[in-house]
Length: 71
Image 1 (cartoon, rainbow, N blue to C red):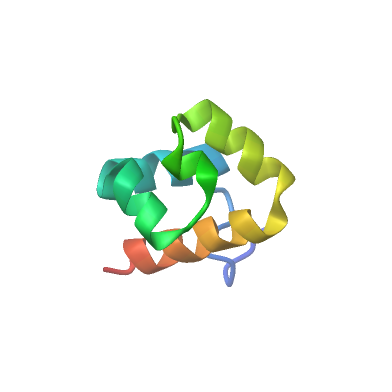
Image 2 (image 1 turned 90 degrees about the horizontal axis):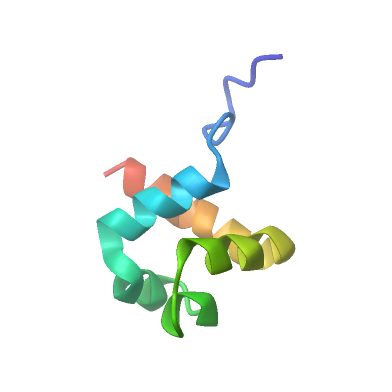
């Protein structure tokens, strides 16, 4: 089933997080999205665990990803 109007279709959360971490670094991510998993001892694994359980934080990451890829 194709979803032509959904720009996040087929993009994994891990891929989004890796892209954003490469683009901004952990400090930049923490500046854009104020969550502890980006501030205190950040890692991809711990951030993914938090983001998968916390809808509001995942939404913020998705929004930042969409703004970043449009640049």
